[in-house]
Image (cartoon, rainbow, N blue to C red; front, side, top):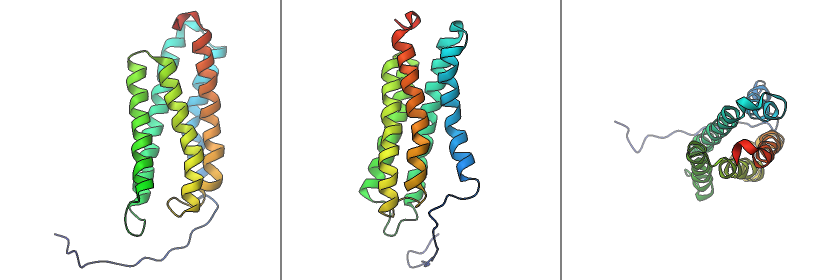
Amino acid sequence: MVNPDDSRTMTSGENTAPPPLGPLLTFAAVVPIAAGSAFLWIGDPAQSYITVSMTLLWSAAILAFLAGVRHAVSFRHPGGTTIAQGGTMLWLYGLGFATIVETVWAYTLTATTLAILGFLSLAILDPIAAKRGEAPLFFASLRSVQMAIPIVALVALGVYVWLSPLFA
């Protein structure tokens, strides 16, 4: 059992540059979203339903994962999780879950809009959190660039769904 009087002080430095594998892992997570969107426009229309569904489900999984990242980062925050950290985690998780539900129910435009909202939120909120010390410093420069990929890809996916007679 943990004694509440047990504690430790940790001192660490933080760099504004991401860790060596950071950019690779960061962009590898969003490439499937861009690939799915691109395939819709150049691939076989017979595959469009599964492509849209898989792209949206991957987007939802990434949103839920990044909600977990935000929550895990908050454990190291002095004084525990802040309201902003907890709220952001719940917001992202909620959007990810709602995207799954809307995808399963075949409300693809709603699911697409929710996913775009989630990635747009990350592009805006993570740099703010980094400057406030609630997220790693490299989020300030990396997240906006990283989130631009799924935002653009999901807009293209939404346009495809909107224009396609298969999704009418």
